[in-house]
Length: 243
Length: 243
Image (cartoon, rainbow over all chains, first blue to last red; front, side, top):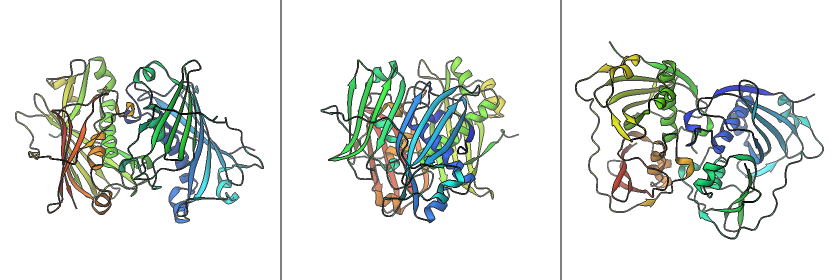
């Protein structure tokens, strides 16, 4: 038995694409999350009824494999599957395919359930995830480790605007990608494309926080290491592999 | 005879809404522009064939009347009409309505046609706009004047990121709203809602520019005046009426 796969066909709108007419990383994550929200809505497990119970799903980790980014106005199929869960983690996969069925992007993610008022994790009970067909696990799914990196310099101050804050009263998770990439030279961004991304979210950011964005570039391995940090608190860490 | 009205039904996605679960101003403009792009696509007057000719539509002015902002997950009908044109300007209207037909937002806009390489305006020829049913005008449509304002202080430096640049190789027009509102106190934003917005775009912003955002608040009239400026060049000016 495997969990249900939910698919929606979408056209890539201009506002999701960047100067090269390709979908941006931040927009891609918003787009696939919309499809998982629509899956929850279709099963009446949607955000609003969760909000009434004071619960919300929060992503803590993504592993992203990119063959190529969707282009402006391209028709794509976005699929998602809430594959499995254990006591505290729900594992959800996403795929983006072109209309010939070629896989453009594959995403593995980890979600936790939080009590929105207390901002703390709560246990995942079977009735929350069973309508999705998710498989109960006793262990954990394997994700690439984000290895410890020394960031010495290349820090940039990040301004958090009113527009960065979402319905969960914190900075929307998608902005971290923009802030990480923004620390790279525009020539580097124009000449390379992303192969894989690993991101781990550790502490949320709220209005009034003053985070900084750090970067370390390994030109030989075409790896870039990124950290968003507020004073002594780590907000998120990313490793991007380029080609 | 009047120009054709093109309507699409959409659901308001979470990533278009702010902390109050209402659609943000910048997202609203992206959303209505998507509908006008879809109208052009449906008539094969779409962006790509324009790009081949080296032409692009650029908005220069919006007048926005807001009864209330659409809410997250709300079903809305977005309509648009390329109402009229003269030698250099095309006038396009947009409406957002709820499913009972109540008007939530009405937008009047002015577009110009530009030669993308030369970054200069070109004359609008009848064959470009006649498939839309646009009416030829000899004069101009009336828009509220954006009166001259003295901005003394309250300037904030704006950082232009890679993510702000769109397919036209300049800052996407929607970000100006975020930058303007970001100069207001969060308490003011929480306690007021927008009644009307007038914005006039004057000079585009490109990667590497260092604009500043100015604000002047008239608390008695509940008017806020905004300007985005780069050294001596005015990029955009806004007047917002609050309630």
